[in-house]
Structure formats: C-alpha cells, structure tokens
Amino acid sequence: MTAVVTGAAGFLGSHLSDRLLAEGFRVIAIDNFITGTPDNIAHLAGNPDFRFIRHNVSEFIFVPGQVDYVFHFASPASPIDYLEHPIPTLKVGALGTHNSLGLAKDKRAKFLLASTSECYGDPLVHPQNEDYWGNVNPIGPRGVYDEAKRFAEAMTMAYHRYHGMDTKIVRIFNTYGPRMRLRDGRVVPCFISQALSNEPLTVFGDGSQTRSFCYVSDLIDGIFRLATSEHHGPINIGNPVEMTIKEFAERIIEITESNSGIVYKDLPIDDPKVRQPDITRARTKLRWQPKIDFQSGIRETIEYFKGRLAGN
Image (cartoon, rainbow, N blue to C red; front, side, top):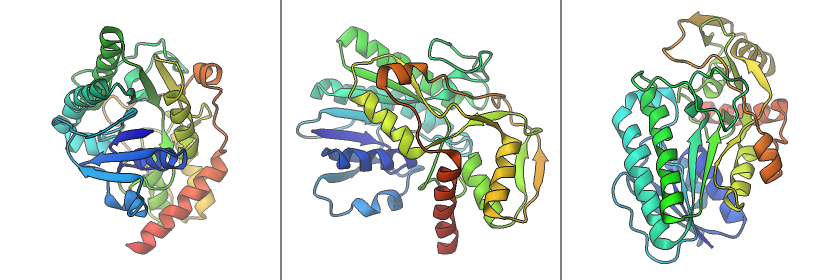
C-alpha cells in the first residue's frame, strides 16, 4: 500500500509517516518547509519505503504510480504561523485541498483531511460534538485558518457526494509531543521552553480559558483507525480531559521544577474561551480513546525540549 502525506515534515505529518511505515506502507512525503523542518524526517533518510518530494501542494501535484491513500496535512497550524502567512494558509486550505483531492480521485485512493477543532471557533456548545456548526468570525485574524479548514471540509464532502470518493475528515484538538517547534507560538512549546529557561510563562487573558491536550501517539492512532474505517463524516480526535491555561502553566512549572512565575497579557482577538472534544463518535465508530495520561506525555515532551534547547 502506498500513501501520500502532504505536510509530512510537520509535527503531525512526520509522526503519521512513522506510523504508516510501521504498518507496512510505502510513504511519499510532500512538504515545502514553510513551517515544517527536514529535522522531523531526517531519521527516515535511506528508508527504501520513504520518498520525499519538496513541493507546494497549492500548485498541481504529480505523483507517478499507484497511490492507495492521500493524507492532506499541509497547512500552517499555529497562530504565529498563519498570521505571518495568511494567504498561503488560505491557499493550502483551498487550492491545496483541491489538488490533493484531485490526486486521490485520479489514483482512486482513499482521502483523509486533517481538519481542526478551530472549525468550532469560540464555541457556544460545550463540549463540542461533530454536529455543532461552530461560532467563527470569518473576517477576524484567525479566520484565515478557521475558514480555510471549513472550506476544506466542504470541498472534501463535495468530492465524496459528487464523485463518490472514499473520504474522511478528522477534527484535531490540541495535540502535543516531540517534534513540536520550540517557538511556534502554541501553548505547550511556549510554556515548556519558558519554564526550562526560567522565564515567566506568558498567559493570555486571566488564564480561565480551557484546553484539552492529547498526546501525539494517541492522536495518530485515532487518525490511522479513521483512515482504515468506513466512516466518512467529520470525527473529533482529542483528549476530553479539560484544564484551564492557568492550571496548565502551574503544572508545567511544577513538573520542570522551574523558578518561573506567570505574567498575564491581553487575550488575542477571537481566542476560544473553551475547548473540549466530545469523542463519543470516535469511541463508538473507531473503538478509540486516548491512553497516554498527561503526566506521562508531558514528561516525554519536556525531555524532547530539553534536548532541543541544549542543541541551541
């Protein structure tokens, strides 16, 4: 079996590539390194079942030979990245999804879209289930990412209905683990790098907003189960254990034994106040639920960041 993974040099794309190779797949990885890094896939160099193509998937994608699965994971994903690259973010959600679907259609391959919990925006329903349509500001600064993913979902379902393609949509909630970038602006690497440097942890707002954190191996397991299932509608994959950002900061300081304190800054525009997945559908349709507890997962992640900081 051959799988194409767009965004394969990113945090999630590289872990997905590892899982596919472990399952016996041949992987064709595509990335243009706008936010991904060669370091994430360096360990796969020389693997005969892994081929890398440097390419922007917002342009036409050509892949020779048989393809059985297309996993579309290409996109800036952190606020720092998509605010710095707003138009490429919109393009990869629209043109990149169109090209990836076109490749899957041409190859008669199964297609899986990496969507996001940001489709729910600043939600008025809590926890969020897949039937909720969301509360998104289309013209706010975060709209370039939120609406790109919502459009990508709409296009994926259009190809499913009109062309009869076998498509899947995963709505990914906050995920953490090794290979996150040190300063990508997301809360996990931000807090850990600040704590390890004994710098104050930056909390936006009063820290009462909530997030739910899923370890990367659990997330990838859910995605693999979805890809090999018969389910076509959107499905949440994430850890339903919810905590406030302030509580998260305090736990990072405790676990790292840091001397850091906490500083508070203004909450960014349209920042979601709550985020917690309802994973009933994943439990029933995929027989999936997270296994890695927060304490274990965060310690693994901290050790990874220690190594990265030492390397700098």
